[in-house]
Image (tube, rainbow, N blue to C red; front, top):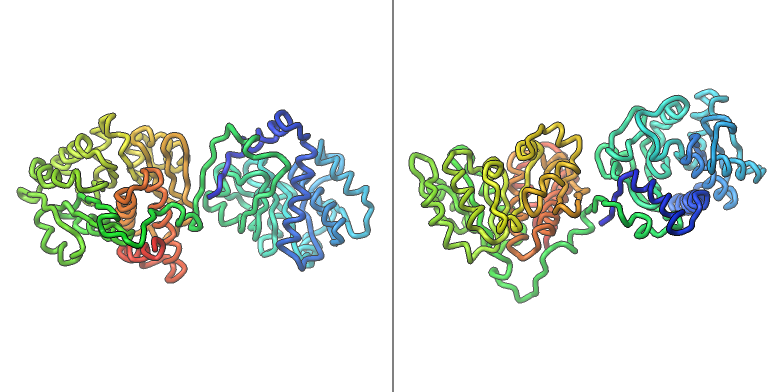
Length: 509
């Protein structure tokens, strides 16, 4: 678990470091650059020749500090700066002068404008490690001028370390501009920036290490609201815990309600996801015409048939079939494949009024949720899991707007329910106070039925007693990690949703 902060919050932290901790900006730069140099030598222990690409702002200043530290450590350092000395200002200029004052034969400083591309390429090829100190978090838009030229010449270099962020990515949104550095390692200062958690920028960062700047992050970032990001290393800490003497009742019972003439597989995939995630009992409330075939496909489930007339679920009969499970099931999943018949709208209303245990509403259930909001007494038990299109419908906007600012979208969705999970690359979860983000995942998950499996996994964790926020986080993380594993084994194409469910068990053991 790691926290990613908005770039403006990190810039404010520099101000806070001076005002609250009495640390001058030039000291922060010294701490950042020298700390980066130590991490670079630790991660490249055999490197003796370093090329530093230094921009004209504070990121270049960090590079000058790192250069000075590397020279003092006995390394050969070649600095290519993008502009003349007189164009540097403030702390960056101070550290450029300090580097020149070393007057070491191990350090050469040249303005990159003065040399041709062939010579720059030779410097890149000759270096054991190239340090990108061109553009920091204060930059915006695509790289221009000399920075763009140097970045373009590093395209095929596999030994680049970026300071703070790779030059050419947007530190806030994660957009990747042309040209852009592809780093093998990014040493980010104080805290990772939100854009570094977003694709495609995340792929440009390589491995990410956070370096301190001499200020306590908990103090200088106290008022900021970060993304709390999770990867597979966090799975075990989130999962339900059982003793060796457990029985199936200890694992929890989840009811899954859905299915229709056209979408018979969705609730079965949700049930399979729940069983693979460890549910002790899965009750499938599905239309009566599905029961015979579904019980053959999934004999591990218990069935609560929903009476139908001409293929349509009869609402009162559905309520009668589900009511006996109100006190026996610790959670319910409603919506997978349910369809949008008006009768399903009545079943939605019944769930929103009567189901008092945690209730996950997904798929077609979300269509009706936009019309029938949960009553305040039950809203605190509600988890919604829309994709961008469903989120747009709930928020009365467009999917494009949702995807352009997913943080705002998931925050807005969390006013509708206790917890909202916004599906997609970099799934986000919010309880209105905190935003969590999943860093695992794969295009292999973008297949029909994948979301149904995810709902079942989360339903199992809810039934096992996890809080709604943690159950949503754990379910999304396990589902995403399963996708990552499938990609590693078989690539991103041709995955079946049932295969995603089958992979789940490898992460919940």
